[in-house]
Image 1: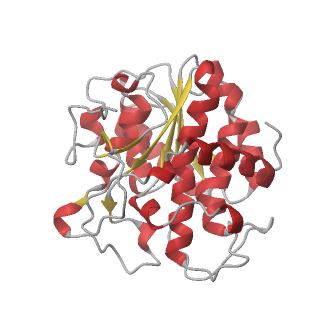
Image 2: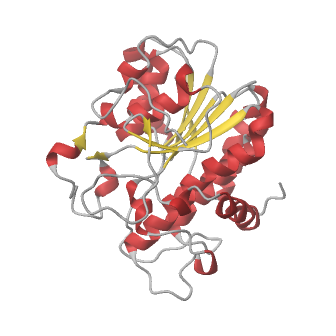
Length: 309
């Protein structure tokens, strides 16, 4: 299969990707949008004219950031709503509050990395899997009617090169048998994130909805608070504006119309690799795009989230 490419690349910024794009009349929801690449994604989509809803854990801070984006982007249609993706009740409340109008772009950006100790949600799910995948799965399914109503919607899944550390281990998702390892847990959760893009496209393409996953690259943000900072060589690191470029490409660029079920980095579809690279060169593991894995994970997500469709 020929890999999908664009005129943009490693050094492109979110604003450059959307420089000639008009998103007026379209609505975007972004999780984890109060800092890092989520904030830059929100800023770029708002600057292109989209109505933007920030899903935030701290509503006061979220409202302040929404106001700042509205001013910097010259777009008053930026709001914040309470959302904790690790809490399924919070996800349901968020959907009830914002899902009454069409959603053209859903950017599942929030995430945590390498929690040093095993932690579980109140439902007993391992925290990285619950935050990075399960809460976003429930959010995406809850917003299905709003996405379908858009008449052409995109679900953007922020994965990571960390997915190369582990496939989804279906027989022990919550580390009930394996010794907990922060990076194996993170890798599993980010493989699950990538598979959600495949599953969305498999099931919802006829509804006009496609999903794609991405690796934003190495960006210094609060995500590394448990890791001692970035280990990636300096010349392979990105600014937050560069890190958000692939997210906004998948969310808002007309170049991606009808494209789904793929994995991107540096604004280009990633090649499949057969073993984990040691030089930070990227690529996507075959298990993170496997349609059978995606179908199995979808059913697991339904069971874990207490959903029926």
